Image (cartoon, rainbow, N blue to C red; front, side, top):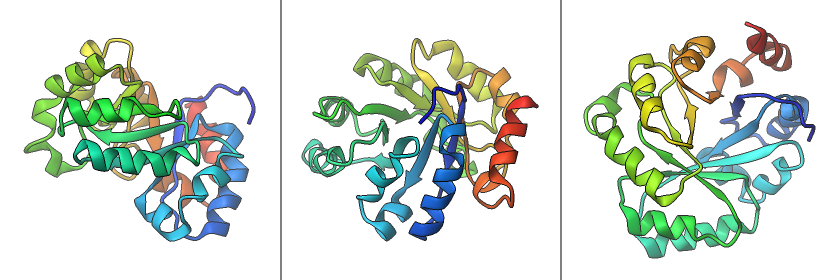
Amino acid sequence: MTDRTSNIVASLDIVEEKRLLDLSQEIGDSVFAIKINWPTILACGKQIISKLGKYSRIICDLKIADVPNTVNLIMKQIETEKPYAVITHLFTGEDSLKTLMDNEGGIRVIGVASMSNSGAKKYLNPNYASLIKDANSAGCYGIVGPGNDYKLLSEMSKIKGNMKIFCPGIGAQGGNYRGAMNSGGDYMIIGRSIYENPSPLKYILNLEKS
């Protein structure tokens, strides 16, 4: 990995291991991190985390939402692969969150304070302020805020403290890279617009110049 500065997180929801590794090798030095989700881990095994770690920081988007004992069991499995960060839900409360924060691998924790899908507007997103407060109190590294809802993102940025805001919803879900940045986002999570692009590296480099 190089020290090149980027605020793009490539969300690679790819289940074919060779394609995933080839793309990660191509773009790894040009993004802040690569994010993978359950489909990739289930298809390729947890070892894919450390394999991808050769090319970039790896964020495991596990959206953990369970009781402390189960959270601990999940983290014990993930710690062996040394990801940069994990994404967790915050609504399960401070006991589950504390278990995550106490992991032995020094893995950063990013809490879901909102989501970019329309269904999140009913239950999750209206409670963003309380969730951000809990994440701050626990010492989370970052929170998730929608890159396709500039008003909500702006409100979140006012109360985030020192935490970083990671913004999904850019591209395929209607969010704009520059619009999300101007609304207070720190890192832009971009998936299909990268991995379905015939020239993904060119797309990334051009996006940062926009």
